[in-house]
Length: 166
Image (cartoon, rainbow, N blue to C red; front, side, top):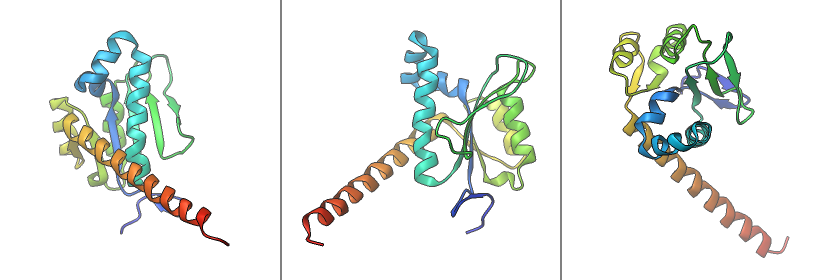
């Protein structure tokens, strides 16, 4: 496996870049929640994407159109490989995503989730991989299932240890 970036002993080869506002409108459950509570919808999206970060050891960056004069970076899980960015008002999420793809050592390892067809053309021309919103939803579901399976295995192993005499 090629190592593009690593933290500790874990390699992060893929970089998933998500157009946050676009996904909030693309996924029906988030679109409905956003009508009631935009902040809760953003939080739910970020939480769901955490499964891809954890199950696949993929770097994840969620980009939202900004508010303010500066780029704001949040690390919801405390990991440098999982970021939420809010662009300055002078830039769009698309602008920032395009810059991140353009600066990548290997753009083919950047996976950009958006339903915006103009953005799709731009990032594909730069060498990144387009991930339609429905495909990202399936990716998240697979990652959540994998994590749940891993937890069940760990629980069984722990139960065996507790039952057997040391």
